[in-house]
Length: 355
Image 1 (cartoon, rainbow, N blue to C red):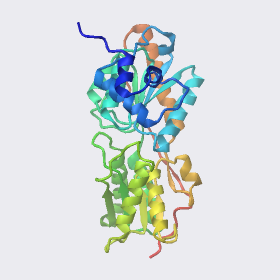
Image 2: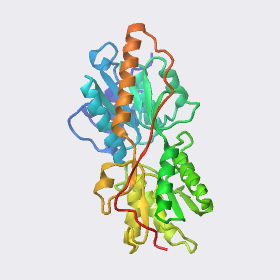
Image 3: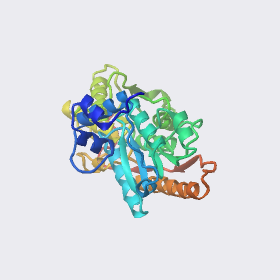
Image 4: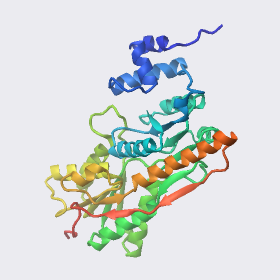
């Protein structure tokens, strides 16, 4: 008979105590463990095929919402998580945070755990790496995505119109006289259409002003994302790409668009270090309206993503569908998409083009 894997086996392989394994795998509050320690425990659990004891049948699981995030290095996700938790608590629910560090194995581990455990539902804040697995799981557990997805993914999503966001930002910069713009981004994900939609919106705005050829799109393809670095990944991408662009002999852009606010912060840092003034020499904008964008120097012009409203919609959808499944032991066909309109937030990082 195959020996049952225990938390002691995981602890031995990871080189930590059994208590540490228990607290990390059960997301208990208390000691703050380093990401390295967490990753060692998760890696050991995955390698051994260890499954945390199920919550099935417990009252705790019935009032618990799992929130999957891809990284802790971008404040967008910490703000989003805080917003979800605050509203969930008001409704009598608690959350459990599952940080995948953009590691598919970790994501799969969490999905396996919740497929055998009692929970009110799951909120994804990024497009799942295993959409078919998630769709299958959604037949028994309510699952919602806060973010954009391709139409073939059937789980419900709470989205923001990123095409409109791109149009808004493009039209605003063009109104300031910026006829040549550089868009700097982390890699475009295959499953997530948000970044591509932003580009398409900017292109649409520029085409209407007959300057569609004046958009330089620079996509990072050599910087690997990880939560282990002391400098946030998306900030590093903005910094490195801005340095690279300003060294080009044919660089003509007078405005930079970061794929999000963290990338915009990196762009600003790179330009400032190179001796440029913002917005006198270059305008810089981002997306997301995270808190740091309002207090940075200069403060960043950005797009409001209505995190509070979208968080509330996601929690409400989870709770209503959980109540339905509890009463009928069945989840009816799902809402495909709820979409919000973006809002332009103008701050000090933008000004008239310096031709």
